[in-house]
Length: 193
Image (cartoon, rainbow, N blue to C red; front, side, top):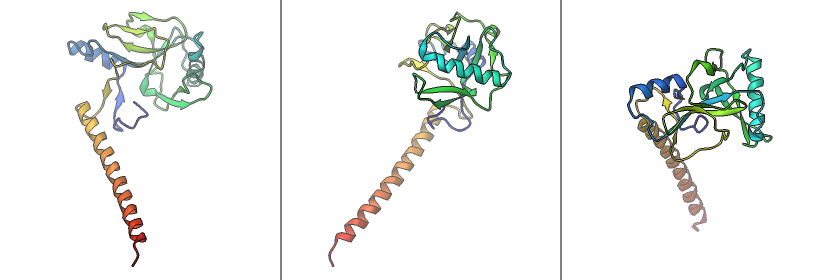
């Protein structure tokens, strides 16, 4: 989502604190769905081979910024960027971006969790059964009942989609007009006078 171009420039994926508020205030919010809101790094490296390189690189990035893993860190998606990496089983890795600070990479102990791994790297999610967890080792997994919650200046996701659809339609119309112009020029050049 962050790299898709679908989200407006002022939008971001919500963090754990914002989700806690939404779940508390809106009865049934995300019921039957799950939402990912970040990554949890428990240890430098991961015995699950596909996650080993991403875990090591995130740990290295945290060290460079003076952030110790300790008993585990919650890293919100908003401070992550994707980087292509041919050595990764996923084809890419997460790297910390310029928005990262000690104030937004938080200790796991700051939150109540229903399930946690004890090593490596995992997605942090609010589950279908309304539980807070980070125990799924598959970083690239997704399904039809998965969501991300977007925080934006826009009032609704429909406005976001309408804007994206409008931009796409304008781009498509421009390309059609260019193709039609080229077609007409070629037809004209074939005419014998």
